[in-house]
Figure 1 (tube, one colour):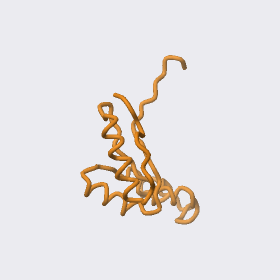
Figure 2: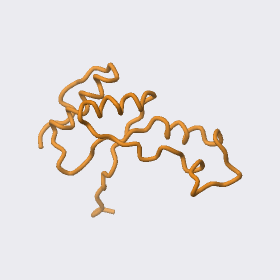
Figure 3: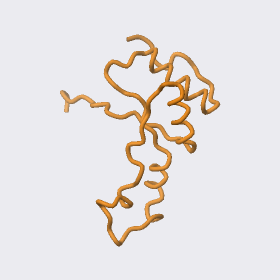
Length: 103
């Protein structure tokens, strides 16, 4: 629809070392969240005897590796670059500034 706009409510990444990355971000003063620690088929509220752990390996892998990063309307370019720089530092990746410019 031409008048529709994206809500941008979550910005998620995946990391095989998600929990270590989250602890590192927290130590740097950057909040992050694991919004869905369990895939739906393993949540008590949606339990179904037909499904068990291992039945949906992709969903289970995402539940173990997905991390939501800060995202809100007043996030500055400098803050975005700071988050990106910390992630690169914690994952031994090269940071190429600027990730975001302006604002």
